[in-house]
Image (cartoon, rainbow, N blue to C red; front, side, top):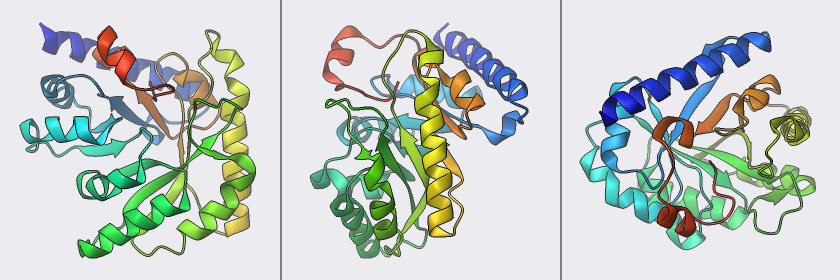
Amino acid sequence: MANRFVQENLKLVQERVSTAARKAGRRADEITLIGVSKTHPAERIREAYEAGLRHFGENRVQEWEGKRGAIEDLAGTWHLIGHLQSNKAARAARMFHCVDSVDDVALAQRLDRVRQEMNATERLRVLIEVRVAEEESKSGVRAEEVAELAEKVLLLERLELAGLMCIPPLLDDAEQVRPYFRRLRELRDELAKRLSRPLPVLSMGMSHDFEVAIEEGATEVRVGTAIFGERPKLAQASSGLGSPD
């Protein structure tokens, strides 16, 4: 029954992605759907994988350590989307394909150093998390500091800077979130021009507003509740403020 629940939810979300892309004059295959599986058990991840989902987002290093053994046979792409403390960077660099929440040069340097120590042959994909609104509870670098951080990340040989990520204010009306998505796209465009290199990834949009994000240029959307259902209240309370879904 749970398998059917996740399967049907995933199908509905994929239809919403396709509709939003079509409305924006884009192709659905331009947008990567990341299933935010934080606080949900490994069985739900397996069900979503069997239903066709390939990208998954986790919020906490420790939680992912407890799950990954049960699904290590899956050829998924694993994203760390929550705030990463520097003292957990070494574990994250070994367990995730992507770290989508870099907001500090020391953290980036730590990730790079660990990848060097691992003799990793592939560069670790990273996104810079931008604080698009003045919310003290949110992590992320301020908009005016993005370029300086990006230039420093580009000097790190074992990291691949692919773009930007944001978590805008949680507002009931998705249209009120549109300016924040637009701002991130504009920041990305300005940054790509300044760096003279493409930054193809814009990770923005969650269960309640990803259609608007797609209209504003999102290439990755992070959807949890609409696929896996509501998180347990205890899990919500312990998952941290501003967590991405």
